[in-house]
Each structure stands twice: as structure tokens, then as C-alpha cells.
Length: 379
Image (cartoon, rainbow, N blue to C red):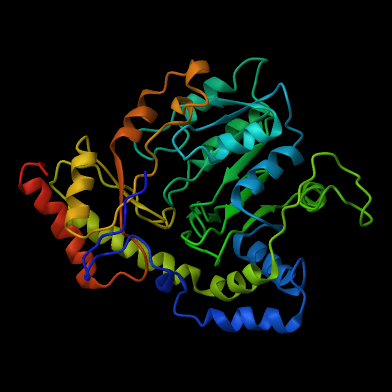
């Protein structure tokens, strides 16, 4: 659900491209690529892949065209295909479901944890029992908060089922001393412009410490070429390459990511303090495992609050209003009982939370939310 931008001159935007630039002159990055004259799989991509792998703590990073392609390629490289099932959450925007469908497999939706809204270990344990196990599991880090990777990874290892991290919303998050992207067989990142580490267009990457898997991924991102150009050695290949322009921008921004994440987290902490005592559910555990990609409140009065915020010039979004198993393309076949997932989809609303917010803008957001509830929650 996309909220239209506020119309008032002093509106608080949900996202700004200027703020996402981290104060850098990104035009210089672009000019450098134009001057070098190589635009696909060149030195900027190689340099970014090396830097990003080092940052995540993985042996390999493979740049691709976008985050959804990364998920699709991860599943294909793991051998997932028609007739198989992939376990995933159903409250994260249908991106994992899209990737699963592109492999010919079917989703097996698993309930999420009431607090984190990420895969519930107990529910996954149930899905992994018996001989009829899913071929893979996708664990999505949602809103900037990492899923319970120690528990999920242990369950998948015990069941001998490969685990994929969807880390598109958790660049730089750390749990148990390990960053998002370093926990699973393979991890997937999006560099869509609104992400914590965003490009100036689409972009994505995979990280893994499995050398053979990395080799398959590099081949699959480029038609299935493995040893020689134009010789297709692997089926299921795609044309999905991170271009030099995006890699140059990401390479310049990467050293500033941790500071930007800290700024986001500070905004979230301020909101939590300001909303204490209100009849809303605020994000919990705002430590280093949560990089505040989104600041998401939960309230049964979500739609009325949304209308109020827009009238007050405060940008907002809803991430995400329709559970995957309730999407029109799946509604007729849905047999999943996911009450926590469905309740969350009906209540979540995202407030502005990015490094470019000024103290005055943060104050306007908090005042607008508090005013709504002081008026009884009526628009």
C-alpha cells in the first residue's frame, strides 16, 4: 500500500533521494564509469563484490540485477525446481513467493513470531518434521530486524535442508557477532534505492562462503556460461548482472553504511520513547541486530492513523497489507492458517525513518502520532 506524498511545503517525506546519498557526490562515481568505458561486469563490480563480501563476512559476493533475481538464483543454484516446496514467511511483500514461482516450486508458508514478525522457529520445526520436508527455507529479515538465525540455522542443519537468508532489509545488522548475510548457505540482498545500502536504480547481490555454490551463481547470473562465453554449461541461467554504474555508487556508499544505520536506529529509539504509553505496538530489540530499515508501528486503527498522518503532512507506507497466501493469484488454492501473519498485515504502518530526517521533522512525526491518539484515534 503506497501512501501518496504529503502536499504541504514543510511535509515530512517518507524517503528522500538526497538523504540516501549519505552526503556523497555520487555524480563523481558515475562520471568515473563513463570515462572508463566498461559498463557490465568490470572493475567496479569486482571491487564492490570484494568489499561487500569482506563487510558481510562471507567468502564470496556475486552482484546481480536486483534482489528478486538474487532469491531466484539462490534457489536454482541449490537445485530447487518443479514439484518441490520452499518454506517461507507470508508477510514480506511476495518477493520470496515470486522467486519460488520462478523456479517452478511451490511456497510452503510458515507462521511468524508474534514479536519479530520473522519466521517462528517452532513453526519451522514443525514444517521440517517427517520425510516430506521442503527443499529449502527462506528466512526473511524484516524491517531491518534479523530473524532468529541461530535457531533457524540449527533447525535447517539438523533437517539437512538448505537455508537462504533474504537480507534485503538488513544490510549491516549483526546477531551473535555475525552480520546478516553470513548465516545461511546463501544470502540475498537488494540495493533498491530505498534500502539501507541503496543504488541509484535496481541492483542486488548474493553472499556465500561455499566456493562451489558461488561458482554456480556466477554462471547462472549470465545465461549459464561457466568456462567459456556462449557455452551454456548450466540450465536455469538468467541475464542478471549488477552494472558498473550501480557498483560504483554502492562501493562509495558502503564505508558510510554503519553510520547511516546508527542514525536510523537513533530515530527509531526516539520514536519508541515518544510513543510509550500509546495504544500501539512499537518495534522491540533496537540493538545492533536491528538496523531500522523501516520503523513499523502496529495498531488496529492503522487506516485511520494513515489518513491522519497524510492530512498532517507526514509521509507513510504500509509494509505489507496483503499476506502472500491471500494474494489474488493464490487465494483460490490457499489452505494455510496463519493468524499472526494476517493480523500483522492488517495493523502495520511505517513512519519516516532515515538518516536525513531533521530533529524538527522527527518532532512533527511524533506530534502527529500522539495527536491522533489523544483525539481518540478518530480522523
